Structure formats: C-alpha cells, structure tokens
Image (tube, rainbow, N blue to C red):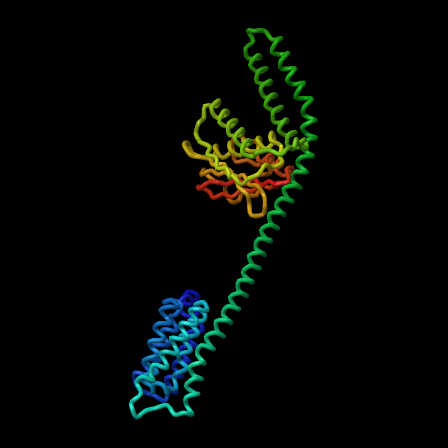
Length: 405
C-alpha cells in the first residue's frame, strides 16, 4: 500500500469491515434495516480516529439502539454489539467516563423492557440471564479501562526512557565535541606559546631599528620616513597579535570570589557602550533581563567581564542598526546559572557552529579568530560550558552556564 494511503486507511480497518460483513452475512435477521445499521456501525468504527471518541460513542449507542430494537429488542442476539461503545469509552475516557458509557449501554439494552406488550413477560429462569447481560457490560468496560491505563503507563515509561536516551546521546555528543575542542586547543596552545616567544625578540629588534631609521634619515627623505613608520605600525600590530596568542596559550591566573553576576554584566554593558560611543557606532541597544532567583556565584569578575564584552560586541556586530541585544540570566533545571546573550542578527551557518570556538576560525574579514576561543577557554577554566543556538537570518543565542559552587 502506498505510504500516502496509510494516513487514511489503517490495517485494522479491514478487520472491522470483515467483522461487520460476517455479522451481516450470518445474522438471523436479514432485513435491509438491520444490514444498513450494521454497515453504519462499521463506518463509524472505521472513522472513529477522525470524528473523535465522544461523537463515536454517541453514534454507536444510537445505532446499537436501532439495531437491537429491529432484531428482537431485549431478546436480540446483537446485545453484545453494545460492547463497541463501552470499549471505545473505556479506552478514550477516564474511569468516570467509562462508568457513564457502561451505564448508558445498560440503559439502552434494558430500555426495551418498556416496550413489552401486556401478554409478554420475562420468564423467571431468564431473569438471571438478563441480569448477567446487564452486568457483563460494565465489567468489560472496567477491565478494558484498566488494561488501557496499564498500556498508557507502559507507553509513558517507554517515552520517558526514549527521552532520557536522547538527552544522554545529546550530552555525549556535546562532551565529545568539547573533548575534541580541548585537544585542538591544547595542541594549538603549545604551538602558539613557542611561536609567540620566538617572534617577540625579532619584533623588538625590528621596531627599534625602524625608530632609529626614522630619527636618522633626513627630513627631506619623506619616503624613507614613511616606510619606517609603516614598519613600526606593522610591528605594533604583530606584537598585538602575539599578545593575543599568549593570552590564549598561557593558563589564566583566576582570582575567584563570590560575586553578583548582575553587577558584573552591568559593568560589561557599560564598557561595551563606552567602546561603542568612542568608535562612533551606536547601532544597538542592550536590554538586560535578570532573574531574581540567581544567587551569588564564584567567578573571576575581570575575566568574566571580558567574556561578556566579547559576546555582546559580537552580537552587536551581527545585528542590524537599531536592533536590541538581550542579556538574560536564569537558573537551569540542572542547578546551574545561565547567562544568555541573544541577538536577532544574521545568524551562523550550521556548518560553522562546531568551529566558531576554535582559534584562527573567523568569518570576519578583519578578524583573526581568537575572541571566541579565549571566551571558551575562560568559561572552561571556570568549570562551565558555552554553547550556541543559531538560525541563519534569524539570530543567535550564546549560552554561558556556570556551576553554583
């Protein structure tokens, strides 16, 4: 059967149609009305998932009433057909609903006693049969309800296990990504530290030589003086890059103290706004959303302020003019403090998400790819985690999670 048909036709529908065809074929009552009512019951049973359990139960009770009435009333062989609305109610409703549907089915069956003629009566030896038929319906309803509840609990347990496995798989993937990043950072850190120390001495010699050349050349030789200035500027730029290399490579000497994250973020926002004003750019506004439930946390205020300034600056650079960058704090379900920096900017391509915390990786034309690498290193040394959620064209959320202790 094509896959598209399975949304409309289920395998059990053929079983129901076969059952009602057999009932019509072997029914002691072969009248057209009885066959039509059996066909209508089959259609309602097949359409039950689409019309809903309440409408299905009501229609089944009405059709059962007509079917039993046209096939002998209280003596009808079709009294067992009342199990259909009872089972539907027991599987769809709670215990009170099951009781109501079962009593309604009993009332449908016993109501035919009212239509007995004066010369008709129930023999004494058949009264127990009548009681047994009436009791049979609520007993089956209760047992079906209990079975449905047991199946539902098992399904919930299986769903909980599946969700737990999915969370464990997600955590395992995150741990593997962090291990890979840590290995790359360790190797790059050793290489960077050695290379930076080796470059510092020749850079110092080059700058001193350029300054001496600038002072010794004649004022009329403008080209030589300009070249010497270029050399000094490039040496300063290279030294700045080497300093960033060393900041990344060397272990941080953290000054841990219990402090208020809100005050630290306020200081970082003030510093960002000051830098933004001094550069002549006022393209974004920072909105602060602090949770009052966040207690004081142990952290290095200077290093964490550096983290926040970097994240806010990146969010501002990715955002269009006049937009808002939100900084939000909250407690997570697993007992950590989370700082989220949210922007509605250009977002990050999925292929770049795993690499953005790697050194030398950048999508900026004038970047060297050390900002987020240093941010991740500082967060790691605090025993925390940083991860990003991003959708291209919609924005990004950088989440920094720190342990309470």
